[in-house]
Each structure stands twice: as C-alpha cells, then as structure tokens.
Length: 525
Image (cartoon, rainbow, N blue to C red):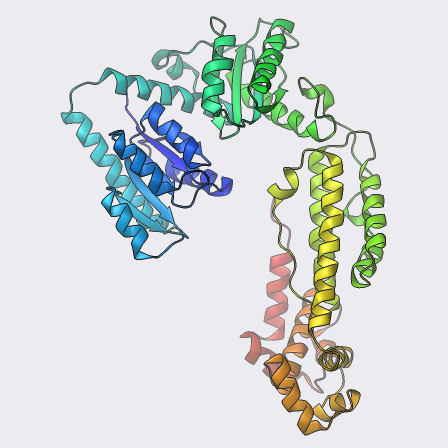
C-alpha cells in the first residue's frame, strides 16, 4: 500500500480551512488531509482518535486555542508534528510554541513557498521514520481509515475513475453501482460530530451496504447502495435517516437531513451529493421537514432580476434616515423575490447581496464624502435559518447604514459640510478658496485655516482630490469623453487636466479608462 502522511487542519475560518486543504493536497502528493476542525475541541477529538502525522493549527480558535491543543496532545504523548499559523508576531507566542516542540511557526498571510518547504520537510521526516520503525497495526489501521475517508470525500466532488483501485485497497461496504447520498447538517450542541457518528449513525447502518463519515465540521454523510433500477431511496432507508435525526435531537443536537436522488454509479455520486446540499438550503422555508429532497427544488425561473431593481426609493430613504421607508422598501423587495412559494434560496441570497453592495456603491458615487460601506460576508447572510430572519437582517442592515450616515453628518460641523457640498456641486467651475469662504460667511484667510484644522487637509489638496475622484467616476462610467471630463472637473484644457491626473494616479486619463474597460470586461466562459 502506498502510505500517505496524514494531516489535520484546524482554523476557525471556513475559507482558510478549505484553502489550506486544497493547498496541501495540491502541493504534496504524499499528504492526505484526514480532517478539518473549526474549534480546538474538535481538533483535540480528531487528534486523539486518528493521531495524524502532522497538524496545522491556528493559534486563535474557539474553546481551546492552538497552543492549549498542543499542550494536551503532548500530555497524551501523541506523535503528531505541529505547524502553527498565527496573526500574532509577539515573541511570547513563538517562544511558547517552541517549548511545546512546534516544528514551524507561520504568520498570516501565509508565504506559500515557505509553507511548502516546511511541510515537505515534515512529510519526508515522517516517511523516513516509518522505514526504520517496527510495523504498528494500529497505525496501519488509522491509515486505512483516513484513506477510506479521503476516497469517500473524493466521490462527493470527483467525476469517478477511482473505483477499481479503491475496491482493491480499501475495506468498503459499498460497491460501484446505484447509490444515493444523505447529508446530515449539524449543530451538535454538547455532543461532538464524531460522537454522533460513532454512537448514532454508524450503529443504525451496521450490516447494511452503506458508508458513514464526517465530511466537514458540521456535515455527516451517508453513502447508500441501492437496488438496480431504484427510482427513489427505499422507505426503510429513509426511516433510518429520520430515526438518526430524532436520536441526535434527543441528545441536544440541531440537525436537518438532505437526501440526493439515486444515481447510476460512483461517477455520478457527486450529483446526488449536490442535490442533497441544494435541498437543504430550502430549510429557510420549512425548518420542520423530516427529509429535504429534490422534490422541494424549484425549476421555474424568476422574471424579477437585477435589472428590475429600482434603487432610488431605497437610497432616498437611507439618506433621509426614514426607517419606515426602509422597511417598506425591503418588504416590497422580498415580496418581489417570492415569485413562487419557495424560490431557490441561492437566488434570494444573491439578490440580497446585490442590493446591499450596489445601494452602498450608489450612495458613495452620489456623495463621495460619505463614510465607507458596512462590510458583511456571504456566510453571514447564508447562515440565516428562515426567510423572515433574512428579511429582518436586510432591514436592520440598511437602518444601521442610515444611522451611520446620520452620525457622520452630526460629527462633521455645518460649516465643513456646507463647504464640501458646495465644492462637490461646483467642480466644473474655476473654484477659489474665496468662493467657498463666501458660502460659509468667513474670510478667505480664516476659512483656509479653519478647513485645514477641521479636516486635516489643506483646501487646495482637498479640491484637487475631489476633482480627480470625480474624473475617475466619469472616466469609468464612459458617460463623457476625456475633453468633456476635463471641462466638468474644472480644467480649461485637456493638457493641464492630463498632467494633473497623471501626477495623482500615475497614469494618463486614457490609460485609466482603458484599465477600467479591461476590469469591467466579463470573464471568458
């Protein structure tokens, strides 16, 4: 058997876990990622149960931090080699890591070449140690188990071509024939996913042609063989899935079950898994459904699209701090999304993200002096469990953004706000400090001192920055040619505009416009 070096990845950010997993498997053929953990407790559970050769840990994790995980592993004399990821540069962390025998200490963002070299060295040392160590049946058993999990995970994402080798080398309970995938989506509560697998799911399918394993931190998968020609998952298997979910809930876990359609063989297993995942997204409509399957998935497309959105009423409500107007708009927006009783959740989430991002962008374009946008993540929106929670989130988001703008207005005194508004509205004129000073009833000399004191920028530099920012917006939009842009930003001729633009941006107006066209060009299919 071609032995692999087993690897555990532990980080509380899903994107980092997924990225590291892909990085490790792409970099080193001999490395096998047997598990990913989101918390120190989950990492400790995998370390104790599978004893991986190498563990890549983040220092800052919930429940147990990375250094505490290593300390406990050393107390149990686990043979795992540890590599640490950290956003901390303090020497104390590195010093403590060295004391625990950590092999390498990496700062985020990761230097991939440095990481690859260190990981390769650890893999080579592990393999060299195996050549001189006596055979260890328990270690072989762990390797077989980790290889089994790797193979099964690949079935969920690959196009096949793995069947013959797996049947020869792995003790699988399933064959390369008709099958379907069930997916348990877990919030395990006090129980760990590994315990729920070991004590609930595995016993329920004991003696049946089925494989059960942990796929992600919160996902437990069952791959079931089906009779030839089966058009649906047999009722007895559905009953077992329902029974497992009920027992998990009895133990305090929150769980939903997704079930994919039957497929012909392992080459199509990924389709069954994808349907189980998609069906589970419909839990936002009916959280009490026993099993989510493809019968729930909508096929009708919506006539409501991005081009259908009228941003003007929303932007007006935000800038006027009209909470009732914001709520009314969001209610109407969600009503438009519900073109059928249960539209695809991915459509609902995607439209909400588009609305949030573009409403903020349009306000920034209209009033560049406004504060930056409120950041949010796709996962933040996608993790809501009901449609009503998503609607409330959208209303609350725009209400918070409106309040942020209101607070910003209050913090900037009336004189400065009036001056900035006047500058913005008169950029096409040959503005002087005395023109703006007259608008706020101050002398030119006092105004320039006052403006610098309150904004931290002298008037001349602020005016230049406002002109260049406006020029960028016009050039990107394509709403005017370069000569018109020069005139609309207060320059009397193209040459002086081009010279000022290049001084501030490092490129000519035409170079900037060409760059914007390249950036906005749709990606090739």
